[in-house]
Length: 131
Figure (cartoon, rainbow, N blue to C red):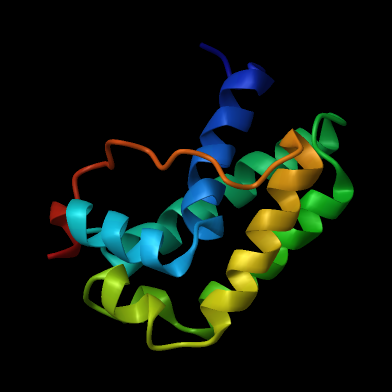
């Protein structure tokens, strides 16, 4: 698999956006089930932003989607989620900014795929580096 395999990278981005776009109750259930750390989620957002920048340069991602991803990344920076220990389930209910992240993620998914309500991933990477 190469970095030029846009279908693969678009699916990877869509998986994370599906999590960010989900209804709050679904986010809480999923986060608790997988014990997702807020800092791990922030790392994933940073990673997909870099992927998206490359895709936009190659013309395989709309500039509007890239701008929305940059805004999501900025929200993560503003909330200082890298500096917070703990589970995302605790954070997602504590800050109204998550509603704005949810709206942007939904907008990207609708523009790219025609819908925002996607199945949430069954597996997440190990979280041990955040313990």
